[in-house]
Every structure is written in structure tokens, then in C-alpha cells.
Length: 134
Image 1 (spheres, rainbow, N blue to C red):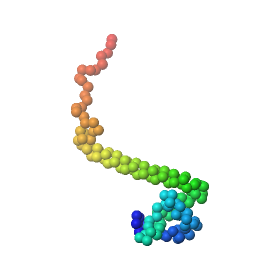
Image 2: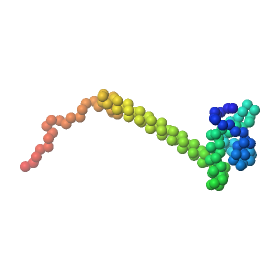
Image 3: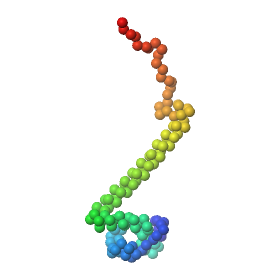
Image 4: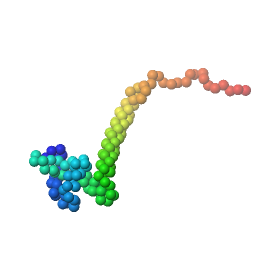
């Protein structure tokens, strides 16, 4: 088996029977890039548990919502992009948390924890009290 490691590996006939679809439908989904089953040395398609979850989503779009193959492809692409953006946001949040922690631990030395290092403390001049008018 190539590409993926998973608990289950199902042949095309078993998957077609489980979901009540023709094997040609699965081949069409593969040709259109909606599914990417693994292959054995003998080039037999093997569907993993992950593939079956994706197939269930595809069938839900097609059967329940009436989405055509082109629409399904667009939805899957958008879903993958959203998942990637979510991963990037999580990575960014983790980075920010690490920066905040690093700055908090550097608080003992303010010059290292400051975003812009302070050169000297800002103290107002001694004789700048406002004058009262009579």
C-alpha cells in the first residue's frame, strides 16, 4: 500500500456495496480528483477510513443537497483552504503565546522585554509646574 497508513483498507467493490453506489461512480470521483485512494503493488484501489469519511461528505453534498461534481470540487477546495488557514491561525496564536511568555520572563530586565528599548526614563523637568494667574 502506498501514500497512507490507516486502520482500514477497503477495495472498490466493498466500498461501492457499503454506500450503494456503482464502482464507476468511485472511479469518476477519482478521475475528477475528489477522491485519491491508495494503490497496491498490483494497482488495486484501496480506500482508507479517511477516504470513506471524505466519500460520505461527497455523497451528502450530491444526494442531500443536489450539488454537482464541479460544485463538490469547489466546496472541497474551499474546505481544504479553510482547514489550512485554521492551522496557520493556530500556529500564529502559539507563536504569540510564546512571545508573550518570553517577554513576561524577560520582565526582570525591562530593556530586553520592551518592544522598543527604553534609553532613559521619561521624567518631567523640575520647574515646570503651571503658574497661577491673579
